[in-house]
Image (cartoon, rainbow, N blue to C red; front, side, top):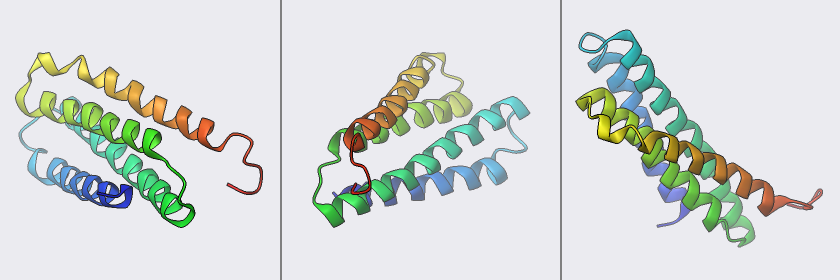
Amino acid sequence: MSWVGVASVLGTLSVIAGAFGAHGLRETVTPERLAAWQTGAHYALLHSVALLALGLHASATGRSVNLTGGLWSAGVVLFSGSIFGLVLFETRALGPLTPIGGLLLIAGWASLFWLFRGAGSNP
């Protein structure tokens, strides 16, 4: 699957998660847990859009963006997925996955910088 395809799947799941949080969880979880859910959905959607742009760039230029795409994808799954699991199931075992996912998201942004360092006006 291309990075545009991965972005499409993650974006779809992000919107579903956001809608579920707004409509399906509002009456069943605490405001703090709902805010955590929305953070997970927000980060997932934000990184889906960034991954879409990255995938479109790769398609247009033939440039490999696998490191950044992989870090962002894994980061979304671990960061947002663990938050969703914590909110839905209150499973504390998922807690350590959230910061690992966050580190992967940060590493993805750092790898994007590395990928385009010195690119000047011709990325």
